[in-house]
Image (cartoon, rainbow, N blue to C red; front, side, top):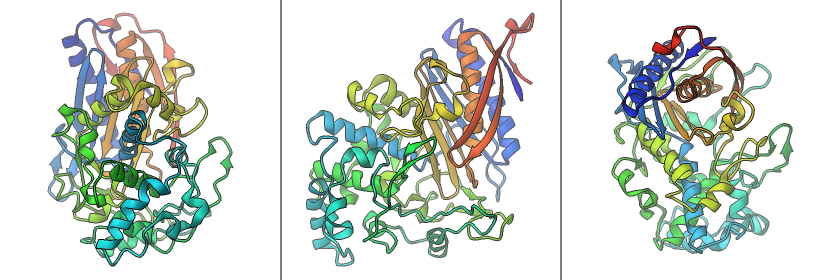
Length: 440
């Protein structure tokens, strides 16, 4: 357990200097604990800060830098959702519109040009009932459309299986197009029974949903193929040259740091991998579900623009993305406050997205009570992605303490794949602590 002793904000410069110190201490401790790189960025009303610690390239002992680029995996979904909301706001479509009419024209055009694409409509893939799936259901992870991701954690101590991962590693130079992933045998002509689950409500995670949403965006913008869709155009101007979207190639090709798969998938129990995925093109499998590449600072900016400035989509529609207090997912957004806020009430409210792809895990969150945006990237993938919510717990409360002139005692407990429990309590600041800040 760490004690966070923090100063009140006096001036933007002082806040920035102190914030850098606090974040760097978190990054150093967590990079040592998890033996990986951490890139942490924060944006507050008083300023910004970005730090990095650890090793990004273990083969060459290359240290982490704040300017390092990372694949952010499913953080892309938060951006895709905001892009959909932008077009809903402009009247292109409605949240309760069925998906088929919004994508079938594009699917037909692509099929006419690509003989390997063996379908030209949603109904051909999943039947008439699933063709009626709405944008709202797709955004909320409440559809019956299967996920292309085959990761299946073992619940009884056996081998955790992931046949798609094995295939991606066997053919690292093959980039799966979204239409390929939509038509693989375990996705095409299949459906799943999406029912409410204990504690999290109705929640059936599927990255296929967000590829379909990407198709809807592409058709609405008038292009004739998925690859011609310009995701960058939905960004604020100042981020358009900073955030990239990988439609081909590997993390190395995208300028990213190496990333290491340290999971137990396809291995004997207790035998972890250490696979370097820097040159594996399957890292970006999923397109508008998982292809964003950026620094932590620019992802913190993206979160700020979506949730605070509402520059991507109208405020009324962005508010609909926010998860309810006790639900794990809203529309393109996780309830990160549920497992990383650490306190009850407004201070613990937060929303954003987890990012997990082959060899990389990350998290981004916006906390409205203090108007704080936090983005954290790591260059490892672990079975329970514990390192990202763990570090978010301490990062957010370091910032909260600084802004509120309070002291928090925090601890983090792993709870499962979608996070853990961050428990923090306010404690009286020791006498004389107002002249420094420390994590002890």
